Length: 388
Ligand SMILES: *Cc1c(COP(=O)(O)O)cnc(C)c1O
Image 1 (tube, rainbow, N blue to C red):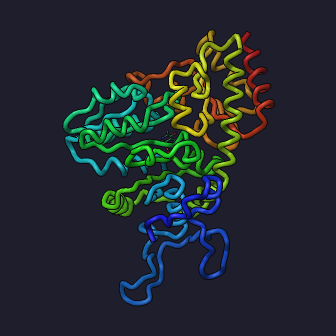
Image 2 (tube, rainbow, N blue to C red):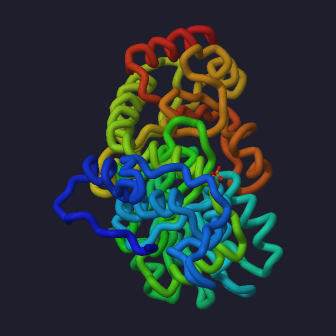
Image 3 (cartoon, rainbow, N blue to C red):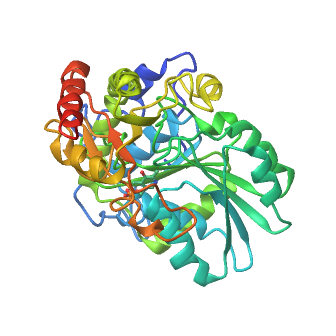
């Protein structure tokens, strides 16, 4: 029930996205896995059940989602959680007091807060380094380093880490490598195939894709570690409800085609911003002046839907632009069909203010949606015109 069924190997990602974890409902033939809105399951005899006994432990809608995510990440096992943070927290509970973790220094703000404010109190030690430099990761490794934590591309500066070389560095010692693949999604990169031990998702973002649910996931290959994580998933109970699993699974079905448009639009917008005289710097791995442009081409199918930039006129102008777009809504989060604009420093990354990870207050981050690129560029053009 728990191990992902492997569909035929020669199927392309687009096909897998539509079919992975899809089995007609055994009682009705319903093509979509129903929302099994139930807490418990009637047993045939004492302690004799059909694989489901209580919905914290297992729920068929969640099983379908977990299977689909495992298939798409080319992993053996998937586990779904109530949020991305719940997924990250559960992975970190595999560690014990005294263990050391090397993590990126351009990290999702909530992950940094979980590590430094909540988990540091439980006796875990963290080092934060520039993970776009494998040498910096290597230098930070200690005898007690049990985990290396990567985001690639990073949030919000869109730096890349070389997953394969980082896996080699981690495995040279006793550490495992976890990759938060939220920004790329499995449509663009599959870290397990490059040597990572865990893939983590905030499925709230590209996997759900419609800004209508919150969820998280962990995908992995190691059977023993899967059993430990499954135990923790049930024991801690940060599990998603069946409705949210259904919405995430529905998102998965269009992931490939949404990502294609996100990436095409983001590329055009990044190129447009680069030519605009008010714009100081554009951060996008698809621009040939991006420091890891070559790595992006090697490691990712496309450079993603996120674009960040700064303005010559700094923070006040950045705030004005963010207020004056019409199609780009001023909001946190990312990965939905609609375009969003935000200033990470006072918004998504407020929890890293006054820390070594602090973000340029004038940085603007775009989550480029699937609208028409020309409409989006026109919207940015009129917003940028308001600062002159
Ligand atoms: C949003 C996000 C998270 C946290 O996920 P939630 O679903 O909001 O709990 C973790 N990592 C990255 C990269 C994110 O963007």
